[in-house]
Structures are given as structure tokens and as C-alpha cells.
Image 1 (tube, rainbow, N blue to C red):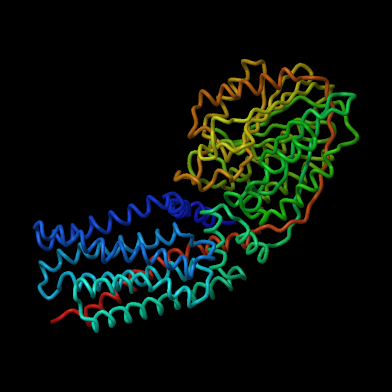
Image 2: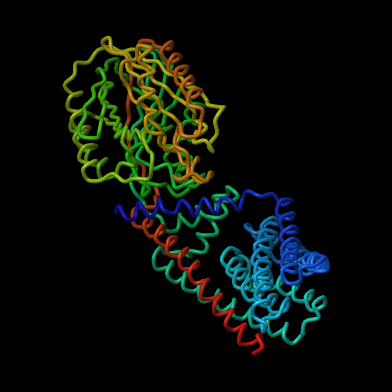
Length: 606
């Protein structure tokens, strides 16, 4: 994936922060807002037109009877008659659509009131009301036709019914010309339907060529997950267009020496925990951790392997394939009681550590305190090839532990990563082995939530003692980490006589897209009480250290064939979303202008 594509993906954060807000208001809040905007806005419009008590009273009546009441009746009827089985348009969202329609319409009524005092051939309230209808009609049409999965007749009725009810009320109260009213309604509806048909046909055609399936179905699935946490529709669409790839996984298990009691399991796989929320492999670190904890009754850590968004698994079905492979090898055999000390190599901005357990090298890579994002898959392929020349198994971990802003790893960063990791593996391969002690512990961070950047997996600490060296590994269930926190943690555990180690995150995406943060999520440490967090870190390491006992390890590496987004599909999907959002946004402007011109030609008297 190119740097430009990556930054474009990151640039979509404001869009899904915006979408996220639609899930927030309650039905009662929306109805209250609808009532207040219609009445207060109408009062403002009539007072601007006629500054008097009579203007205020008329405005309140108009807001209540021409806008609020028809909007409420419309929302109830279109939900009950045409959109009742639509997965997106529940009653709350039907009212939300009426609310946004009212905001536009009432806003134009206010503008029209002022305009009528300047332009004498622009009449109030009639022309202002008609202008609002011309603008609201395409807005409602594109909203319903793009998001609803019902039939054409149901969509048409749902799009046109509210403007029709408002028109009927206006004709009765304003005593508008029925001919003018019908002409306005028919013309505005015709323009909005033509515009919607053309834009949707174009989007569908472009999408079919780019991603091989209906982009609107994909979009509806996306909204269902974003708003209702229902991933089934989107995952079914992703399954249709995904590509099969090999997924590499290394599982490293520890147990008390000479017993069958598991002390801890480390799972490192090159899936990417995305794309967001509960879709595909976003939840896979948690699924793996919880499943193995139940089955093996042990402490489980699932740090981020080397992978990018192209390695997002597309569905829960694919997750189960990976989980089945992991649980199938978790009953280890051929345990070995020897390990090396942890060694560390720096190269430019990159730091890599390596520690060997039996014939498995555990490699961690970080750019901290500089910004780091996903290490490209090609770097992982190169390092895996290097590792296989030295060890039977290699667990490559992208520590994912320092970020201030969205960034990319340039060629120099990648060279530094390769050089430091290769150096660490070569140095560790030459280290003498010795018996080791191992301890593990887990602390669930109930004080913090995914909205604060902390996933349900909490903190997992592994402590290893080899030849007098005490090293510690911390895995935090989160997506990346506030810059500087890693260094603070490593400094803090030195007070526990843990002289070296590494801090890692799972890169879970269950924290993504649920808060309006600049990155689309809060990195670990950004939105929590850091002192409370550090106390938990000290607690988990202290417990792991207390659990130290003579240990032995076993490792297994295997490949699973799974469906992923792939480089091409993910790139095309992000491009399509990016350009489609721009197209719809910018096409609305000329459509509204054309509607306004037609309105002027038909209704404004010379």
C-alpha cells in the first residue's frame, strides 16, 4: 500500500467520527429537538418578517401545525408502513431524518423571511416554503435510497411523504394555491428522484468495477455495524470479494518444569486486528485470549504481529479458522528447559530485542519514542526468512507502542527495523543457553473502557529470569500507546529489579471509531489516569514476579488459509469510500442550485 493510500485511510477519521454521532441521541431527545427547532425556528422566521406579538403567535402555530405535526406523523407512518423491516431505519432514525429535514426547511424559512424584506418579488411565507421543499426533497431521497434496503416503491413513498404532508398543512393554513403547491411538489420530487437515480447508478457501476460487489450494500452493512454493532451484513459482503492468503502463527507455551501445568501462552500471528469495531479480526485478539484462557486455564497474551490492514480477516468465520488452528496446537509437546538472556540491538530509530526459548526466537520491534504504525508485511516476510535460517520458530512482534499522530513508516524506518531485528536475532543465536524461571499474571482494567482506549484483555505480564537477568514483557489490550508511556513503564519496573523488557499492545480495533478522537481512537494512556494505570502495571508485574518458578517452553508455527481484505481490495474500498463521499457531497450543491433556479423560474413573480 502506498504512502498516499495510507494517509487517505487515516483521513477518513473525521467522516466516521461524524457518522458515529448519529447513533448517540435517544428517541426522546430527537423528538424534543424536532419540536423545538420547528417551533422556535418558525417563531424566529415570522418575527423577522413581522416583529410583533402576532408574528410570534403565528410562528408558533405554523411551526407546530405545518412542520412539527406532519414530521411526527410522517416518521411514525413511514416506519410503520414501509420501513418497519428495514434493518437501518428504526423509529429513532426515521425521526432523525425528519429532524434533519426540518433543520434545512426551517433554516430556509428564516432566510426567506429576511429575503422577503429585501427582495419584494420574493413572498413570505409561500416562496420560502416552496424553496425549502425543493432543497429538502433531494436530501431525503438520497438518504433513503442509499441507506434503505426496501423496494423502490417503499423508498419513494418514504422520501416524498413528509414533504407531501407538510404541503397539505401549508395549503390549509397558508391558503396557498393548490396548483402551485402540486406543481412544486411534483417538480421537486421529480428532480430529487432523477438526481438520486443518476448518482446511485454511477456509484453502483463504479463500485462493481472496483470491488466486485454492490457498494451500497457494503455501505449499508458498514452503517449497520457502526450504528448497531451488527457485523453480519458487512461481513457477508466482504466474504464475496475477499482473497485467500496464508496466515502465519507462532504459539509459544510455558509450563512449570516437570509438570503438566501451563504457566502462560504467547500467540503471535500476522493477522491485522481490524478493520474496526467488531468486524472481522478486530476482535480476534480478545477471542483468542478468552478461548485459550478457558481451555487451558492459563495466562494468555496476544501481541500485534507484523501486518497491515491488508491482513484484516473479513468475518467471524475466518476468525474461527485461526482459533481452531491455535487451540489445536495449544497442548504442546517436546518442552525444553533452556533459554537465552534477552539481548537488544539499536539501529537508527529502531530498537529490537530477542530472547530464545528452546528453538524459538521471540523478537520485539519498536520505534519508540518516535511515532510508529503497522510494520509492512514485506518487512515481516524478510525477517521471517532470516529467522528460519537461525531458529525453528520465530515470533515477530510489532510492539506498536508509540504514537502522537497518524504516520507512515518510510524506507529509512523500514531499513532500521530490518537491521536491528536481524542484529538482535544473530546476537541471540550466539548467546549461551541456561535454565530459566518463568512467571505470568493478568490484571483486568475494569476502571477503563474501550472509549478510553483500553480493551477487555487488560494487562498481561510475563517475567523471565535467565542467568541472573530478570526481563519483563507487558502486553496491553489497546491500539498503540501514548508516546513516552513505554519508557515510563520500563523505568518503573526497574524498581522491581526487572532490568530489561518490552511493552506491547494488541492493536485491537474494538477501541476504534467509538470516540471523536483525532486518530479515531485513544492510544493507551491518552485518555486514562496515568497514575492509576501505572499502579496496575506495577501490580501485574509484581504478581508475575511472585509466580516465578522453574520453567520450560514449547513452540509451534503453522499456516492457516484465510480470507482477507488483501492489498488491492482494501485500497479499492478506501478509494471508493473516499471518492463516493466527495461525489455525493459536492453533487448536492449543483443539485440544490438547479432546484433553486427551477423554483425561481416557475414560482417567483417578475
